[in-house]
Length: 281
Length: 338
Image (cartoon, one colour):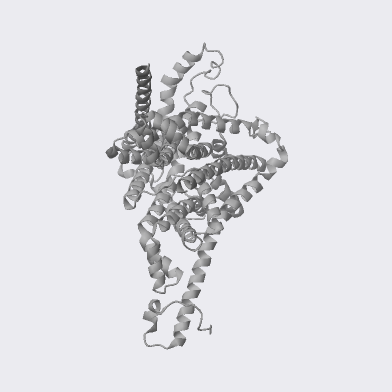
C-alpha cells in the first residue's frame, strides 16, 4: 500500500518535471523559429541599396533609406523630450518625495502607463496634436513616442536611485551640499549606468512601435526632413509593405523587420550588460 | 539680507566661491544654492505630477473624441453588432467580442506554459542554464509586435492553414457542441491564429513575472517541505503556489492587459471582419485591430468618433485589468517585505 502511494507520487512528480521541460522547450522554440525565419527571409533582401535608396513605387526595386532616417529622427526627438522628463519625475520619487503620498500614486499610475496599449496613446496624441494642427506630422509622432518613453525612464530612474546607498547621500549632506547638489553630483553619478540602461530600454521599446505612429506621423513615400509634415518610419512602412500584394514590397518589409529586430535585440543586450538586470515588466 | 542665524549649508561646499571673501557674498552664494535647490525640487515635483496629467489627458481626450458616438448611439453602441460606415451605423460588439476571445485563447495557452517554465527555472534548471534561458525569454518579450505580425502573416498562418486547421476541422466535425467551434474553411488567418500569436507574445511576460515571484518564496519554507519528503511537484503545488498566489494572479493579469491591448500582431492575422462567428477559425476583429485598420481611412466625424469610442472602451478595460494586476503584485511585495 505504502509503496503504491510512493510510486504514484513519484510518477506524478516525473510527469510534472517532464512537462516543465517540454514547456520550456516549447517557449524557447518560438524564439528560434521567429529569428530563424526572420534571418532566412530578411537576409536575402539585404543589400547596400536598402540603406541608400528610397522606398520604391509598387513593382520596382528600392530601399528603405527614408523610413530608416525617419525612424532615427522620431526616436531621437522622442528620447530628447521623454527622458529628461522621466528622469526628473523618477528623481522626485526616489529623492525629494520618497515617503510622499504623491509618490505612491505616481508609481501606481506610471506602472499602468508602462503597459497601457500604445494605440490608445496614438489616439490621445491624434486628439491633442493632429486635430488642432489640422494635419499629420513627424513632431506628433515624436510626442506620441515620448509618452511611451516616459514611464520606462521613470521606473528605471526611481529603481536605480533607490539602490544608491543612503550613506553616500548622508556623507554629501554632511559636507554641506544642498539636496539638489547631492542628487546631481552624487546620486546621479552612482546610478548613472542604471539610468542609461533605462533610456536604452526605452529606445528599444519605441523603435519597434507602430500603432502610435499610424495616425500621428502617418507615413511618407518620399524623403522629408520637415517635422511639420508626415514622416516615414520603418514600422509603418513594414506594415504597409507587408500587407501589399507586391513581391518587392513584401521583401523590403522582411528586410526592414530584420533591421528593427536586430537593432532592438542589440539595444537590450547592451542595456543588460551595462547594468545589473533591472526589473522592467 | 536673510537672517544669519538659521540653519545653512556649511562652508565646505562653498570653498571655491569663498576664498578670501567676507560674510556678505557668502550669504548670497548660499541663497543661490538654496534657490537652485528649490527650483530643482519644484521641477522634479512638476515632472512627477505630469505623469498623472498624462493619464488624465488620455482619459479626457478620449472621452471628448468619443462623445459624438456615445451621444448618437447611446448604450446600444455596446451591444449592437453592425459596423457600417456607409449608413453611419456603428456598434462595438464584434470588436469587443473579438478582443475578449483572442485574449482568452492566449491566456488558456500561455498561463499553464508560463507557469511550467517558471517552475522549471526556479526548481529544476541547473544553475548555469538559468541565466541564458532567462535572457532568451526576455529577448522573446523584447521582439516588437510588428515582427510577430509579419511572421504570423507569412509563416504561421499558412502553416496553420495547410496542417493544423484541416486536422482540427476533421477531428471535431463529429463532436457535438465543438463542431461549430471549429467549422468552416481553413482560412489561415482568423481568431484562433490571433489568439495563438498573442499566446506566444504574452508567454514570456507571464513566465518571467512568475519566475520572479516564485524566486521570492523564502527558502526555509521549501526546505521544510523537502525535509518532510515532498517531491518537487508537491513543493510547488502545496508550498510555492499557495504562498505566491496573489503575485501569480497579478502577473497573469499583467499578461492579460498586454494581450487585450496588443495591436500590430493581431491586425496582421485577424482578417478584420466585423462579425461574430461561432467558429474560432473564422476571421474576426478586435478593438485595436479595427482602430489600426480603419482610423486613417475613416471619413466622417461619426466614423472617427466611433473608432475613438472603441479606443476609450479598450483603455477602460485594460486600465481596470492592469490596476488589479499592480494592486495584487503590490500586496505580495508587502507580504514578503513584512
